[in-house]
Structures are given as structure tokens and as C-alpha cells.
Length: 121
Image (tube, rainbow, N blue to C red; front, side):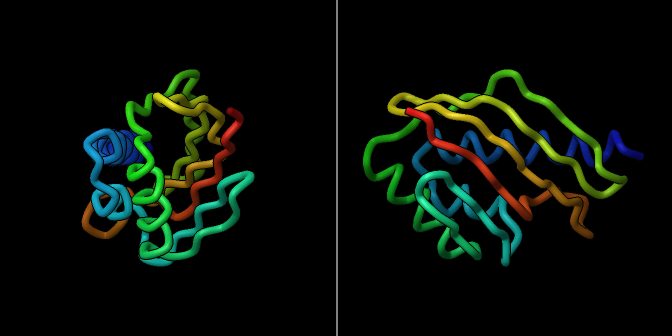
């Protein structure tokens, strides 16, 4: 059963990366639960899909793209949730993801409930 949440999270993560790299902030935000929490060190906390979309739109508007993940770690919490951590890089920045909490929804898709990451340069 845990393979289901892992596959669903990976599928939605790939969708998020494609949206970001395609300049689609709304597509990025659609990968989050409606009341999701995103904590971006050192920029602050963003609560809810609307605030999260505005954050991604600002970054995309400043020319950020080409996001990729390395050193990906997946920790299955239970049959409906998984935590992903990784290093990330893009054309103008890099950092670490300390906690992406993906939760399986009733429709079988995973969405981000929490997204904690750091911009390190």
C-alpha cells in the first residue's frame, strides 16, 4: 500500500517541477492542498494556495527556472503520507528541501500539505 503514496507523490512532484520550469505558477500552486503551509528560509511563511501561488509567480517573474532535485530521500510516514527531502538547484539559486509532506487525497492524487525549504545561494 505504501507504494501508492510514493508513486502518487512522485507523480505530483514531477507535475510541480514541469509547471515551475514552464513558468506556470498556478500549476505549481495546484500541487498544494488548499490550506497548505510553505516555509521558505529566509523569506518567511506562506499559508494557503493563493499566497503560495503569489510566491512562485514572483520567482518565475524574476526569471527563475530549471529546477532540479538531487540527493532525494523518501520517508514513508504511513499509507497516506510521505516526506521528501532533497537538495535543489535552478538557474539562479540553490538550497535544500527539509520537508515536503505529501498527503494522499481521496481522488488518489497526492498534494503538498507542508513544504519547508531553504534558499542557500
